[in-house]
Image (cartoon, rainbow, N blue to C red; front, side, top):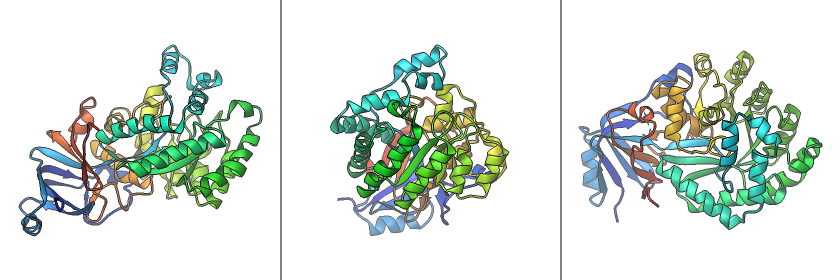
Length: 423
């Protein structure tokens, strides 16, 4: 058996760190640490060493590890695996009919009022067994692994009752236990108001607090708690009650905020020390100021804004103010049916006018922070988990977001093991 993996002749090793950081903010997001003509040594599932090919270190590695597996990456780049900090990839079926409705001009809110949207997914999930849901979800997990993602946060939120929310979270736990990808689980019972509570939202909030959260916590099914704090969904007051209840059980807050309007969700997230606030299409001076004085990661989901034809968040203003930015896919059946983080990089450049260096930081170290993983994931650093991918032969790292429709990933390595992209 090989005693490790040595990747040699790397054209460029991306996102290297001798001194690890937990996030990158403001103008520093345009800086990217790289090593040309590099090697990378992986052992026991961790990044053990890296450097330039002409360093003496590579000879010592070969001498001390005669059974090492050597991969020649001539002309290729090595990146840390993407960290996708916001997905809903556990769902039943698809919603392409609503896609047609969108083309005909119906808005996201109009589709939701007609029983579509999240409530449509809830109906489908209710009829789907846990085993069927797991099988569907694993197909998506294998897909995102092949596309370079090595860590993913998965939310519940298509159950909207105790039984089905727990079913979703148990599926997420099965994915975590059986897949090589790193998984974080989020309880999102407050994703929408079920039809039976349409005229009594507060009663549904009570159900989340008094019945759902205690069961989720007792079975240790979630790391985080999330609320869709936005117009037509849950108010700031609802959000505060739910977050406080979750925090009592050790669940860290996250928030869907300001996708549909200035909802107060960003400020609420900051007040409750949310790990991240996500979407943020409606972000003004007050929201930016609140985020600047916090440890909360602003996370943008350009796939959803693109798919729904929404206004883009003021990305340049946010970075110029000194904020860090993470990007995530929002992989879900209704507003972002793709978990391709390379495409998210491209949308960051094309739609948000981010530099290639900024998007790389946003989908690696900053998105790892938004999952609570930046001490172990998101960069090439000694002692971090060996989640990396090797590209095909490409001319530059800028080519990754530039060639938005091309599969440029040759090999995927997760937790120090080579993953077959076709399985």
